Length: 176
Image (cartoon, rainbow, N blue to C red; front, side):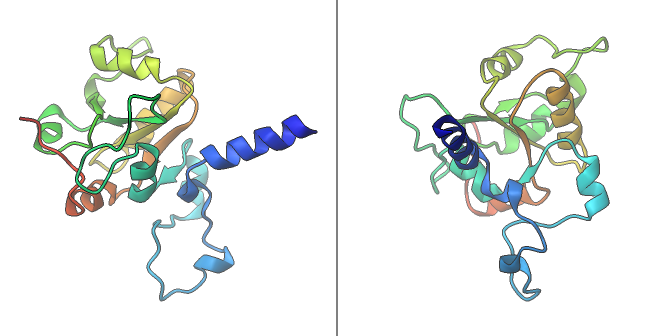
């Protein structure tokens, strides 16, 4: 019984807060309140394989501080951000310590990840939180679903206005 309680606590503590937010929860019922998460129709929610998380959850998981840097010490990272935007968009502003695997180059036709240094990094994060971000409406969700099919667990998708939110907060960096 102790192990069950311990495991339940671990799952609760490792689940991004906005992944389990529900529209009809009493705390979110006030229509005049601006919510951290954009609620989507139930039919769309049922069709998606991976939960959506907010920009604030991404910052928390990746331990990114307000100046666009990471607050992580050399300890083991909790999560990895996989940016599926084209390389030129990625170069204009990226989340610190994220990897870029453009949507059109991510997978082989016969299945599996296309070999690259970024794919090797992604494979080393199996079992940890993987957050897929992108600028086009359904590309991040499609990549996330493919990653789940390839055996990656704990895959999330950054909500639609997430990159814009991070940009306005100054959390995107431009490589030099």
